[in-house]
Amino acid sequence: MTDRYKRLLREVRECTDALQDGGIILNSAHEIVWFNSAVTNLLGLDPARDRGQRVDNLIRHPDFVAYQEDPEGEVVIPSPRDPERHLAVQLVPYGKGQSLAIIRDVTRQVRLERTRRDFIANASHELRSPLTVISGYLDALAEGGELPESWEAPITETQRQVDRMTTILSDLIELTRLESSEDEAEYELVNVRELLEPIHAEFSGRSKSPRLELRLDAELALLGNESEVHSIFFNLINNAVRFTSEAGDIQIQWRRDGAVAVFSVADTGIGIQEEHIPRITERFYRVDKGRSRETGGTGLGLAIVKHAVQRHNGRLSIESQMGKGSIFECHFPETRVASPRSPQRVVVN
Ligand code: ADP
Image (cartoon, rainbow, N blue to C red; front, side, top):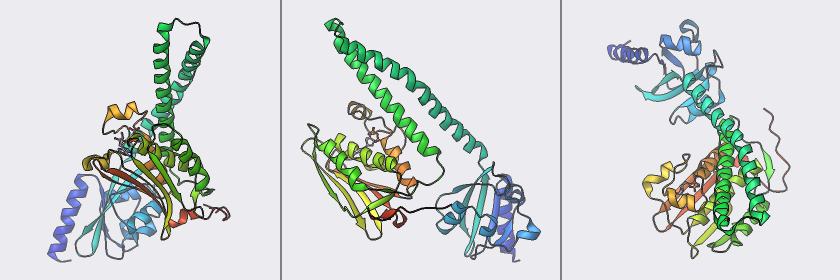
C-alpha cells in the first residue's frame, strides 16, 4: 500500500467512524476493497469473507442494483441483516476509478415518515364522516325552502367551504395512499383515448374555459392503474384551465416519442417563475395562494401527479415562461406502452 493510499484510507476511516456511518471502498469493477467496522453492524459484512466480492452480490436489493447503474442522490433500502432497519446508501467517486459507498442508518427517519403518513391518512378518514353529515344537513336546509332569505347566502357559502374541505380530504387520502405504496403501479391495460375524451369534453363544455385542443394517438395505450392515470390527466388539464385566461389555448397531446409514450398539456396561461418550478410538486406549495384557492385548488394536485407518474416508472417535466405559458409532460417508459388491443401484460413477481 502506498503512503498516499494509506493516508486516504485513514481519512475515510476517520470520517465514517466519526459519523458512525458505514464506508465501503469499491474498485471500478464494484468489488469491495475495504470497509469500516460500522458496515459489519449495518450490513452484516465480514472482512475476512467479503473483501473482494462484488458489492451487488452482498446487497441484492433491486433498488440498490438500479441505483448502482445510475447513482444520483441516494437510495434507501432495508438492511440485508435486518429488514426492519433502513439504510441510506450514497455512492460517490473516490480516488482513481474507485467509489465510496456511504451507508447511514435512517430507520428513525423512515419510521417517523411512516407515522406522519399514517396520522394524515387516519385524520383525513376520521374527518370525512362528520363532514358528510354537515354537508347532508346543509343540503337539506338549502332545499327545504323554509329559511329566511337572509340565510341563503351564508348557507351557500358554508356549502362551498364544506365542498372545499371534502376535496382537500380526498386529495390528502389519495396522496398518502400513493406515498405509502412501495410497489410500482399494476400493469392493467388503460385505454387512454377512453379516459381523455370525456375529460376533454367536460372542460370544453364549461363556460369561460380557454380553447382546448386534444390530439391523441388512438393506437397508443398505457399499462398501469386506470384511476391513477385518470388523476394525472385530470389534475394537469384542470391546472391548465385554472391558470389560463378564457382567451388562451390549451393543447393536450398523447403521443409516441420513439419507444416512450408522452402525455403533455401545454397552455398559454400565466406561466411560472423559474425559481418556483422545482418546488411546485411539493405538498401545499402554491405560487399564489389566493388564486389557487379562488379557483378551487388544494395545493396537492401536482404532488399527486408526480407520485402517480413515478409509480408508473415515468418522469414529469415542467417548462414555463412567465406570461407565455407552461408545458407539463409525463414520459412513460417502453415497458408501460401498449396498443389498445394488445392482451394484458401479466407481471409475476
Ligand atoms: P393547486 O391546487 O394550487 O393548483 P397544484 O399542486 O396543482 O396545486 O399546483 C401547485 C401550484 O403550481 C399552483 O398553485 C400554481 O401556482 C402552479 N401551477 C400549477 N399548474 C400551473 C399552470 N398550468 N400554470 C401556472 N401555474 C401552475
